[in-house]
Length: 193
Ligand code: 5GP
Image (cartoon, rainbow, N blue to C red; front, top):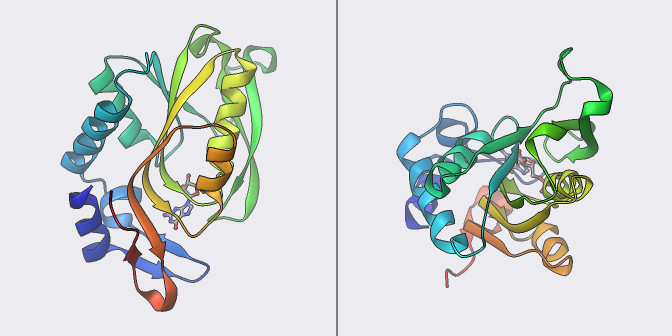
């Protein structure tokens, strides 16, 4: 998506360990028109998949996931990283996700109420690095007996393992901006199809 590429080039900052900081429009301050455009793009690509629910992980996936859910006219649900006292253990699905940026494993949870065996789930996230977040979310989908019908990503770092891992597992992955390298602090994109 041209608009996203332009914003990544203009505002993205490369940090050590191949971390791209996009706090000014995705991860801290959020550009609402950009998120709406992302939702439209994901709808356009996945519209024939029978999506009944959009799933993401808090916090940064929520904005693009919500805009996507609005386009599909379905609910958006997000996996939580902390368990509220109102959610009892036997009422939730849980899994573990390795955080690429924080280098820790977190337990994430989802209420059984919001994902059921007839759901066709579109997973949305802000970044794809090594695929841990998406694989964790898909594990929650599997626990519910539901089906992941697609994966939509704002920014994919194509030089990391995530896309290959997801494709090898049969996922249909649509990334709106694909980064070929961040070497020497320079952002280079994959050729857009
Ligand atoms: P994965 O699970 O695919 O290894 O990493 C994806 C998750 O890690 C995303 O949910 C995102 O929050 C975070 N992430 C991975 N790489 C980056 C990055 O370069 N910049 C930012 N801001 N977040 C990242």
